[in-house]
Amino acid sequence: MAGGVLVASTNGRQYDGKVTMFVLVTCLVAAMGGLLFGYDLGITGGVTSMEPFLVKFFPGVYKQMKDESGHESQYCKFDNELLTLFTSSLYLAALVASLFASITTRMLGRKASMFAGGLFFLVGALLNGFAVNIEMLIIGRILLGFGVGYCNQSVPVYLSEMAPAKIRGALNMGFQMMITIGILGANIINYFTSNIESGWRISLGIGAVPAILLCIGSFFLGDTPNSMIERGQREGAKKMLQKIRGIDNVDEEFQDLIDASEEAKKVEHPWKNITQLRYRPQLTFCSLIPFFQQLTGINVIMFYAPVLFKTLGFGNDASLMSSVITGGVNVVATFVSIFTVDKFGRKILFLEGGVQMFICQIVVGSMIAIKFGVSGEGSFTHSEANLLLFFICAYVAAYAWSWGPLGWLVPSEICSLEVRSAGQATNVAVNMLFTFVIAQVFLTMLCHLKFGLFFFFAGFVLIMTIFIVLFFPETNNVPIEEMNKVWKSHWFWTKFVPDVVVDHDHKVVV
Image 1: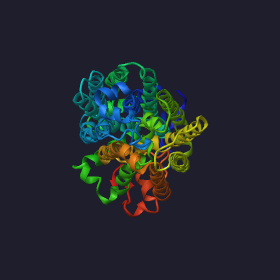
Image 2: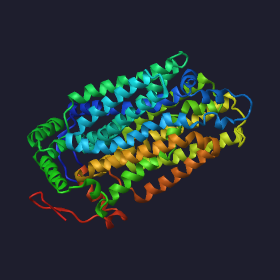
Image 3: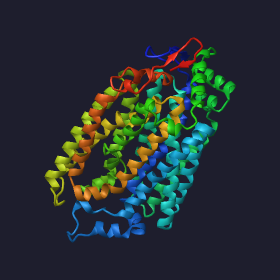
Image 4: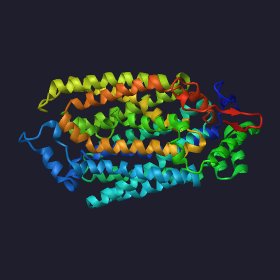
């Protein structure tokens, strides 16, 4: 690939190295873990709007949807606890799995967790595709959740550790890119299977394809130098570091990784350690970023888009095509973040995305309020529906180049090795917990809050944008092991972080 670059920036220690083709291919293969999460996000909403699926598993919802008596407003057509449990059970399982995955990731390596995730997802997808009763569906969803939990815990850490600091943001965002590709692929598949009697089986069963790709890919991947050192494989770690940096002289960076590992080994209980005062910035961001990410309301669009569009008066095919359009916007906008995150930094993307999402949600909520009011009776004209779709797409684009990819990038890059697995597990657990909560209560909230639901999410977008302005320091181009300096220089976090000095023997003195 391109000639030599400095792996770190002037914000921290600098290492010589190249951006090698090996690193790019390795990160691309690992990022396929995002396909699993994305495919499920995209496929679920489409399947739950397919009439043959509802007739077989949720006849009560189908009857309610077809009810023309006027007893139910448009807002409440799909309000059913069993239907939402089908969607949300995956995320509760992913929450539990992420806690176990942190142990696997630390003790067996990052690639072992990725392989396990692919295997769980494969079995879950097959169970769903061949399901004959609701029990098979839910068990399949739980196994899919285990797969998502393991992949979401291990892949971002793997990408952050393999990538040179100079392009860590872009390579880590490969995970989010794969999520968006998975969503778009699922939307397209739903569009073509929606008119087939058992099309829902095809939609759910095809989830086995990305799972097989990840299992095969992770089998051939090398583990990260950080993970190999952590497990006592120093000779192999040095060879891997030389391979991913494209040079033979990696002594300085290798020694820093060893030092970080030695410090990490002094920590007997990572989960207890991350709650210490000195790690308060990491714990705060690993908890609040995924919390805020879900409270943007994005999953309202992603896994309930067809149901939402159908509720707002779009026809069946039109609702699925609208989901394909928003999925396409999601992919394109993620490319924007890949090419800008290391150039302009994380903070500016957070802020621009927040402002744009806030405006779009206010407009969408207002349009629905004007047309449907509190009664839920009304409809959009063709031009009004197109305008609504435009603002939803603008909202999706804003999320896709800000809180979407950064929600996975930032927590994975801010934790030092001794708390990295615990930090990422916290990130995934909080993310999955609130994905579960939103998935479980969204249709009920839509029924009761009506158009006010969009104002509800807009309020959280405003809060999280203010939070970023006040408390988030720029982490762009800073090597992971040098991140302590970022917290120490911040006006608020400096009071929590002790002074750290590295002497000439690479020993850390606090």
